[in-house]
Amino acid sequence: MIGVAPPKFYGISLDATSPDMWLPLTMQQQAMVRPTLIGLNGPYWLHMMGRLRSGVSMAKAQEWLKLELRRYMIDSEGAAVSDARRREIGGSFVQLIPGAYGVSGLRNIYAEPLRILLGIVALVFY
Image 1: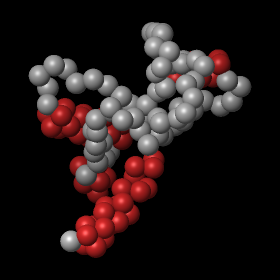
Image 2: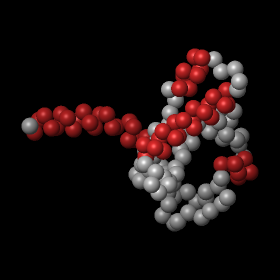
Image 3: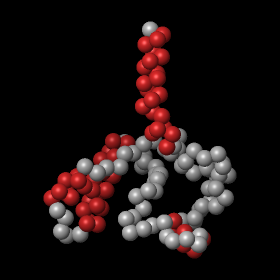
Image 4: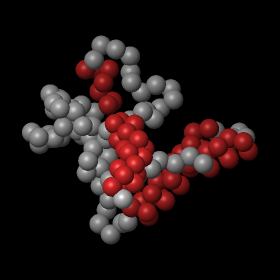
């Protein structure tokens, strides 16, 4: 399926410029002269975005996604999944976060130092 994004849609990352064109990932080899981006390990590096169905809470969606991910991982391993691997898969999850502000690596890098700085400032002004 191919669609058209609104002119001001910049994607889910906080880049300054909007891409000129959006293509389904499955068309990447036809559009770019390079090996496929979907390797044998799967597209674990992709950011995915979706909308919650009306009436579905974030917690309920999080629980569903956690169970589906674990089921998918066990199914992908095949019939002979070791107990150690099952325990490892049992700890796997994808954290849902609101997408209103996009995806930014800066948030992950600076969140803790900024909390510490905020604490120091609060102590100084106290």
